[in-house]
Image (cartoon, rainbow, N blue to C red; front, side, top):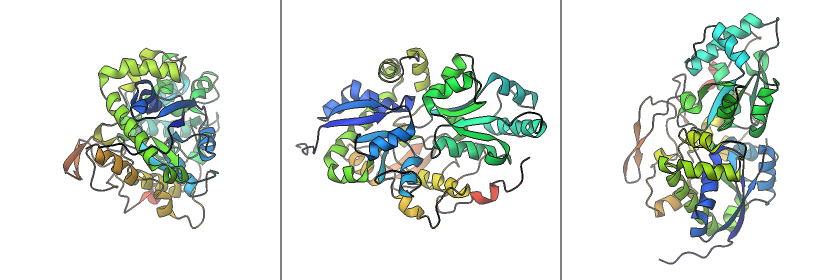
Length: 397
């Protein structure tokens, strides 16, 4: 079967210094892009706002993005010049929450154990806030971007024990590559940030990792590969070639035998100051293709939109269905199906309800997915959102 002619072959893709960028780095270094007839240059960006601007302005044909960013653009919350589409998940499991040694010690004093669960750490933080109120400033906790999974997961974690993000803590935004420095200088007390930065902070002794994304929500949304809608419509064959290359890179990355080589490429391309050994260790915590990790679940978009609604971040008369439509599993399906990849029958699923591996109905039979329990045991049905009742509505503790 002859290949469809590509509309363009020379592409620039945006990447950010995170382990989640590995599929793009590997696709370039291992020749998966070249095998599809693509001449790809990777351009490193250090902040999410700059990534959004360069993608929207056409300086990048595609980019690593945070999962909520296309949703925010569709809602007019993020000033993107054009519609942005999520066409593939890049990874699952690549974030962690770390705190300074001082805050860690204070949390232990207030009842946490060194091996506490995320919910137990949150309960200790509430006791700390209650005990220290009026005697010292509330802890300052950082996330990476206003419209990020990290931001909404941080809020979710705090609200799980009745802490209000605005009233009880100080929340600030810090780009991922600057988190370690900010922790070291004492400007923040904790950070929810992507790999490898929590591990690097711990290795340098400036933070301790409390838990990672797998403990908070194994299978939850992480980084995505995105393109603009006008570019996708004008370059369907090129987009399909990109997706084929990224699927191949994801499969390759899920083989532990390839982690040492992948880490060396990541270090050379994005993070020269991070040891390849640390990056290889961090790759163990991520899934790139197995368990449908690359599938762009529409139910992830609905969960994120519900968090935006929960915290009153939506504009008046927001069209949530229009925003959710920025997630395009149909584009991914058309490519993956031609490759013979297993695909779910539906674009949505019940999220966070499974403490053990579970099954969903696939296009060609039953598919097994990894456990995906959310830390507090509250599942999310995209057809029945319910978080308003658990959002703190009160004065500071």
